Length: 302
Image (tube, rainbow, N blue to C red; front, side, top):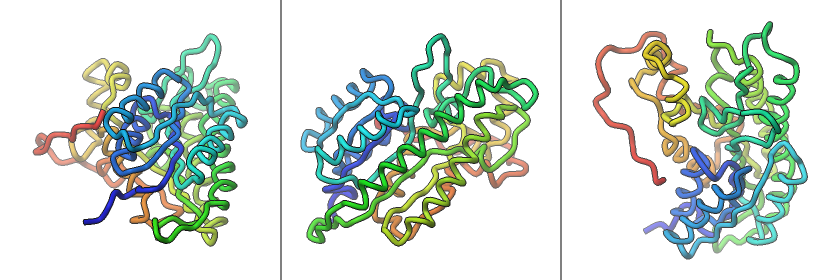
């Protein structure tokens, strides 16, 4: 029987305290991966680490506070993994938010924790420059910081063929289906930032392909989260989105985490530079079928 898919490997997972980051952390641990669990909310990251310690005591999990808009903190996460585990095989950027005094930031991809979308993010005429700059600093610059320091660490990974370990690694940047599609519900700064993540990921993948460092962009569809459901608080708001989903339901964070597991494992060794859409067919849809879903959504580990 084959062993765990991520045995002997280590990862840095940003946004590990909730949503996709939480589900990914638990799923990685179940597959033997030791991880640095980073989040702006240290208590949330510590809760995730505690769950891993209880459920998978043989796996190491270290919680750390990280504001992804600050390069020094991102670099510290990467160095923590290398110092603790001796290597870094996977980086997953599904960060949630950063500290902005006096502001409430909505954590999204459609509120799932792939970046931030400010409540004042609107169309090109109404969005303030400060909102634009803040969004790019977190959603684009934060991803760049993670990639930058991951490259340095992964170049130095020692090879141990007996354990299936080698130089290089896999970086998964969380983008969004809105980086691929237009929508008449404007969020110009957020949408632009996700398009930038896709372009950045493709270029990094080409530059570093021969070094064994793979870069792919996860593009989630809208997810079933309490924040999104609170935002879609009228039948009109809900149905405007739901009618475009071929499966007739919103996605679940665990479905994104499973895609991240595939991209992080050696099973995807010939996949790099991809916009990896996990959107229930949304981006391929023109008109949805009538009727109700035949299958229920899967349950998450959390």
